Image (tube, rainbow, N blue to C red; front, top):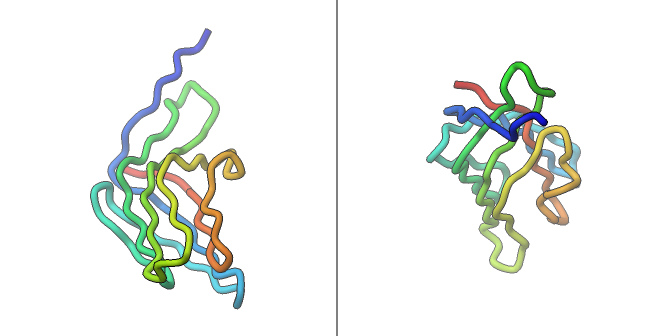
Length: 102
């Protein structure tokens, strides 16, 4: 059995998509800091990768808030390889984890 270990990294690479006008952007956000995409503020609390001897994957713990108070937010882990497991349910925006780097 392979131990379920992850290696902490210092920066998350995220992709934001505006589903209304098909605009996308790549965001690079350091752990402990926040980035913005549209009306979203995306706080990165952790970004981890699998060790080289395990299947490649990245996971980020995100706290996403929308400046529109009636819009949904998100708080939790997002996985690069399985984005459908945990995702932002938002009518306009989609946020995905692209990877993590030191």
